[in-house]
Image (cartoon, rainbow, N blue to C red; front, side, top):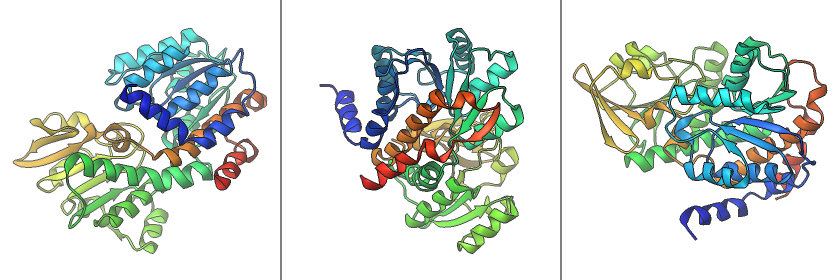
Length: 372
């Protein structure tokens, strides 16, 4: 048995909630599900369950740095079509979207809304009955697009945003940072940019691991929440020269750019925990001399100072680490399977546009997880 087989068996063993929800799936013959998502080992129990129920699956990725090539091989062996590998270029990603069109999906399961954005631009939607979206950034994109089929947001469910977003992302990103850099946050200032649920989790984890936490947040209401939580709220101009580690958690593009690089202190780290590799302006950073000093650590020379980029500016916890714990991700993955169950049974009757996944579609996940 190779290492991947052992890890997969361990993964399946520790995902009982996903297994229970998968048993409630209906016959999926005739369902053609196209997925754009993180394709790592923890996704396999859901993918296997969908294929076993008769669904046709096409898999591409929402982030090339989080793809596990062994996972893709297992998906293909199980019967899925896939256009995904670690380190795909932008052209490769677009080719994957072209293949989605050729696949003629009846349903979509997305993290980042790339497929829907592509289909809407091409006016290619005839085969799609309904879709799912799992990220805040994707939901924002969809609101502006006004999709021509119903799309159900399951990012804002209490069992996802209240668990995965709030508690897991920050914790596991810190673990990835410590493991790769051999450093901790003790005695260091950590500037967290963005105080949404992910940002709050990052603050909690950074403080628990010895960091002095600063928060930069543009929204006055969130900044007030941060102050009430005891955080030291600063502007970006105030925080950047002080911070030893800068962590972006906004879901927005180019939050840290050329002007910010110039204000950072010697030896500081830049890390992103957001969904896509867009929060740090990597093109501007790449204009400076650089060298890889450790796996997942690149040092840039900017004005005679060294600045370190962690995990290439991509999602830190999955690019440089293992992502959520199995027991925590079990709830998230079960929620996704429950959302797909709803998608193929009830969602096609909904009007076009973005909707919150209704409570009855996922509440059995909470009941099972609470009793586990």
